[in-house]
Length: 193
Image (spheres, rainbow, N blue to C red):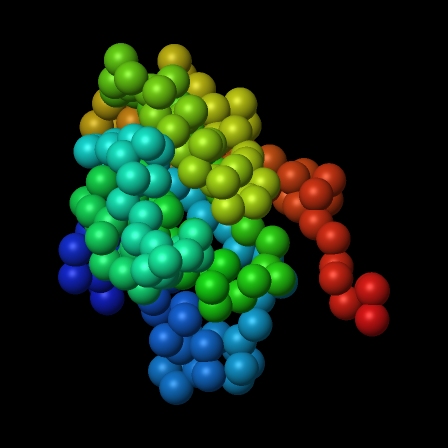
């Protein structure tokens, strides 16, 4: 994450996607090579955005090409509420699939945190529905070994630096889980050539 370049932290997932797309030819040396074309894209979704929105609400904002059943992607993107977690995720997934249709996308669900709102299971379900809608592999962030019980709100704990964001131990646990998911799910399409 490059939060220093983010104008609005709440839509950071969208900003990060836009940085990747706008720098794909590497004018700002964001990537290690020119003509960036990822095989794998990993998004961690729903931890920081407070306002959830819903899958149903985000899908109702679909705009169709007049007289067809074809989605007008640009108009749909404009129609989404970027301050709602599920709308922002849909915007990001639509944009990524449009730009890199062969990239395999992984969406990591929120990790356990000290202050878990009562609707946490609903948050997980809504994010999962949207991720699956766009063919993403869903990684359950709640079962990676980071547990709320051994952490402290606003202070450093066993796996969280502040009760919400993973410290180095938490990052190792998340990395292990993501690598295992890649090992189990990734397919290199170039093998078909």
